[in-house]
View 1 (spheres, rainbow, N blue to C red):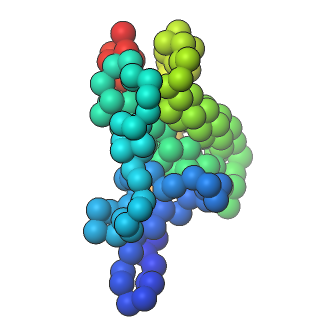
View 2 (cartoon, rainbow, N blue to C red; view 1 turned 180 degrees about the horizontal axis):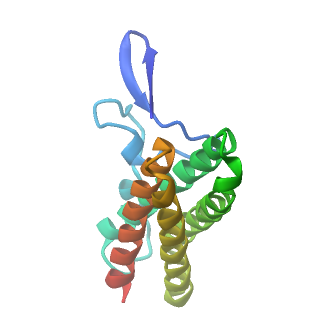
Length: 171
């Protein structure tokens, strides 16, 4: 996260580069900063005409965790590329990029409720758990020497847990 000044008001912004039509995850916008008319993921999903399978709060936490993890893993891989011990980080880079891609796909699939197939959602979320675990384990190997790997490992762990909670929720 980075701090920015806007009109004399201090705001916390995500460092994510998102498509212009996407809103920042609600975890990136503190309640005091949200502008009138902005809608959180939860609020949007509550308006959906199709019922959500499983607990909506758990689903939203998974979506937000996947979004954060995709950004952090991409950033970690990029930081790895700038390190002097690049050869030692090749596996970490690959696993972080895989994790980022899987998290992004999982976030999109979990968000869709219309004609959602629980088997596809479940398989995707399971794949996300595995990608997060692999990335986390590799980042933890480098955490002592690289702060970005320590942070990435923690974020991967949170995403892994959020995905496991969603799997339990949807059965």
